[in-house]
Length: 313
Image (cartoon, rainbow, N blue to C red; front, top):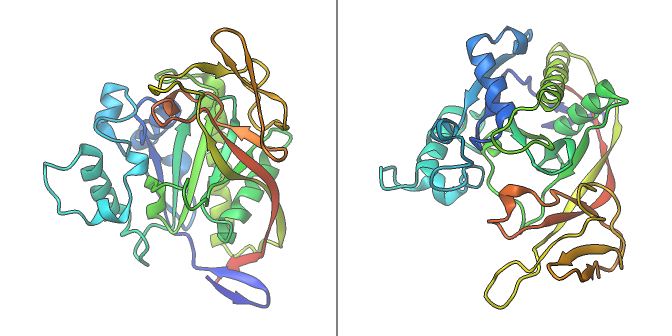
């Protein structure tokens, strides 16, 4: 990126990938990518080469989140630089293959944009995941998408927390974009969730086409929810869960959680209240895949980012 007269200038986004099946039981992305592998006409745009790609085929075949380890946490420098071999976990081998195909991560040869398609069991609706508050290209794209689908909602989750950010499959690209749509049970395909994901991808690709054709996008403000903290379920001394998400919090992703509000309910009916210093906005509430990660939800802070005017260099 360069700057000229207060505009952010980016090279054309000529190479774009759409990842499905990073988690093999999240069916909207799996189904859409398989559809587009057979016929990619819907996702092609002028001046853009768009490649649909199933990232974790063994997990897709088994309809499970992963085989050996979570692929969406496998793109660390240590994993990508490890000596290749069959003794590595399957997803680490796969991460190295994907990095070779779409990266290398952090280099000029990496793909310009990767969209990684996910489903959540939480009541999050449509959520775009941003990995850097300084990525003005992605901020402009997300602003474009939000305006295009209005009055429908599409929120932006910003995760650049140094301890909670993880090494995603999309992080191989110069501009990584996560798309999380729910609620949808694992291994299930719901038509409304499928169509919502499809529409967001359409507008995202339209933005890239317009950008590549030379359209300049004026400065804009984008509301984001910045990840603050991971909250675990209450546990006993042996690590066993002793409480559930409280009924007042269940399905209330993105709604304010204030100090003193009910947060968990123990198995014998007692309420555990939120004791934080101020209002937060929880999301990924009671996500099925995060029980193994000891996470009941994450808290976020609502803030506004300013994206510079952006155009093609």
